[in-house]
Image 1 (spheres, rainbow, N blue to C red):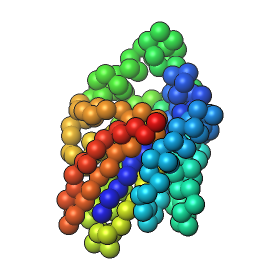
Image 2 (image 1 turned 135 degrees about the vertical axis):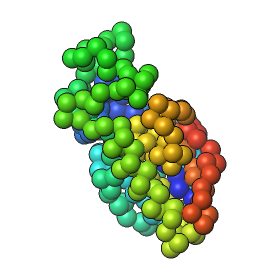
Image 3 (image 1 turned 60 degrees about the horizontal axis):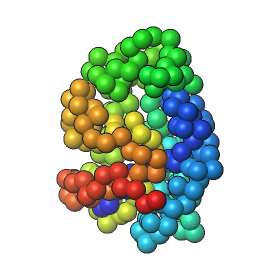
Image 4 (image 1 turned 180 degrees about the horizontal axis):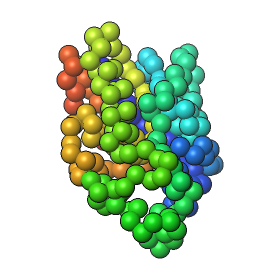
Length: 203
């Protein structure tokens, strides 16, 4: 079994360094271009099934990667991004930071002590939600010969990988944050998996 994980293409909020979370922001023109170039790089991969986050930026990326393959996109809530609740739409970079509390950057720098945003989702909950979905794919014998594409988000993909690897929360960012349209490949056999490559760029 092969599982390709892809982060969506660029949005204007990515470009502006705004917290996106579950706010439904579309790809911008450059994001579409990145997805098209990535689709060309993946053109020979024989996907059997494509799962996507319900958010439009991930769905559009999945549609572009699918191309002319005669398969449906299957929307899965489990693959959506972490919710930043009341903080979505605020700038998170130090030079433009306007989040109402001073300590939000612990999400990136000290996740074990990150305080969940009001009306948001915890890192632990998101990690369990996302990694459980992929773990179920890996452990289903019916999937042994399948090739999947999962179109998701930066934090959600770290949730998948850190959950599958059973990393402690303090090591949540123990690997690269996917670039827009970065691709990771997992290969699984008999319920065991390995990371073939991580955050590969095709543009």
